Amino acid sequence: MKKFLSFLYVIIVLAFVYVPILILVFYSFSSGKTTGNFEVFSFKWYSKLGEIKDVVLNTVVLAVVSSAIATILGTLGAIGIFYSKGKFGKTVNGISQIPVVNSEVVTACALVMLFMALGFAHRSMFGVYVGHVILTTPFVVLSVMPKLKQMDGSLYEAALDLGATPTQALFKVILPEILPGILSGFMLAITLSLDDYIITATLSPLSFDTISTAVYKSIALTTEKASEKIPIYRALTTIIFLLTVLVVILNASVKKRNRKGEVK
Image 1: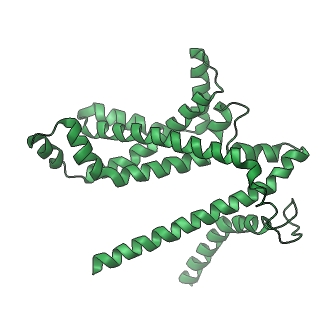
Image 2: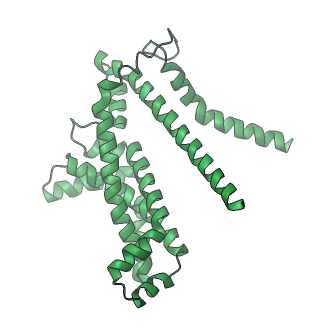
Image 3: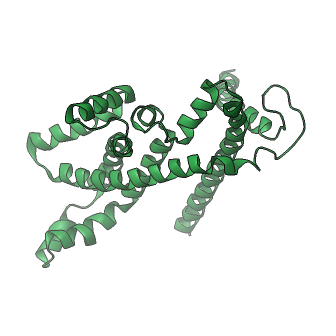
C-alpha cells in the first residue's frame, strides 16, 4: 500500500508539472488562436516565428552577455572569498548570498531608487544589464565555491614554489581545476536571465522586450495585434521545451557512457 501511495504521489506531482506544458504543446499545432478548441492540425504559428525574432534575439543577447559578465565577476569573487581569512571572508560570503534569498521586486526597486538618486534614467539598457548581472552573479559564486573547496590547496602553493607568478598560478592551476563549477555557474546564470521578468520589466526601456515581457504584454493587452502573438509564443515555447528535453536526454546519455567507461 505504501509503495502504491508513493507511486500515486509521484504521478500526481508529474501530472501537475507536465500536463499544462503538454496542453500548450498540443494546441501549438492548432490553426485556431485559442486553447480549448482544436480546429485543424497546422504548422501555421510555427511559420510565423519570424515575427518575434527580435524578441528572441533580445532575450538571448541579454542572457549571454549578462551571464558572461556575471560569470567573470562571480568566479573572481568566489576565489577572493575562498582565500580571504577570518571574519572578512565569512562576512563577504554571507553578503554575496543575500540576492539569492532576496525577492527580485526588492532588487528591482532598489536599483530604480539608486539610478534616480545618481541622476540616471532608471529605464535603460545599462540598467537592465546591471540588474541581470546582480541577479545572476551570486549563483555563480555558489556554483564555484564547492569546486574551490574540493581543490587540493597545495597545488597553488606548489605552483608558486616552482616559479609561477600569482597570475600564472591562477590561470594555469586554479581556473582549470574549478572549470566545471564555472561552466555550471554560467549555464545557471543564463537560465535565470532567460526566465527573468520582474527586473527586465522594471528596468528595461519601454521599446525593449524579452520573451517574458512580450508574452505578458500579449496577454495583458486586448488589442487584435497583441492577441495574434499569443499562439506564436505557444509555438516558441514548444520549441524551447523540446530543446530542453533533448539537452537533458543527451546529458543523461553522456553521463551513462562515462560511467560505463569508468567501470571498464
